[in-house]
Length: 204
Image (cartoon, rainbow, N blue to C red; front, side, top):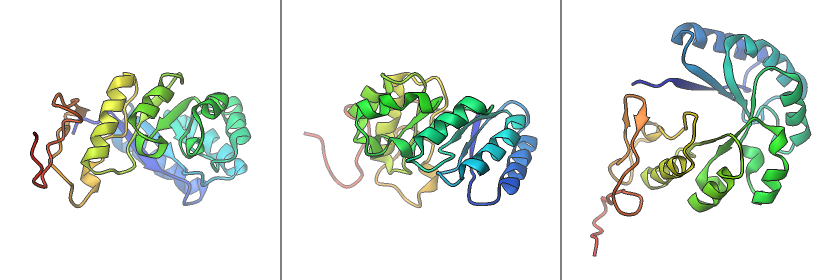
């Protein structure tokens, strides 16, 4: 499908098992595709330190939320002393923009989910204040997913974004105006989000 970035969940197994899974992924995809990992806050500091020391060998692009959301100091230490970039996601939830700016030294990358941050406008405002961001969905239906596509385009994000999640749904609310084509998504050019409703609503 043309993807140049793959993402794997870690943190639910032992560190050693996770390292072996990432090793297998790197061997399967070859040297070029980026590998991102998401621990969903599942590691202790000691586990995260061991994991990062091993994962650096596989060219890991970043590890998202290695520690629980509230452990900002721990993320700051991991970023300073270990060789894999750190991304924050859950640590941003429920915080004002100023509060997020205040912890910007705790991560290399910030994962912005419009539906978890209060919408597209707030995501764009926050994204413009942070140095390095990606935009992802919360496995949304087509309306919120397409809104995330617009947010990523407005921010001109330089990294791959996590918005190719339509195939994780059994069904959707409307046809997808921004389907994946050779690893890329085009921004819809129609009015509003560009989503044509499929439930009988007609434009005035």
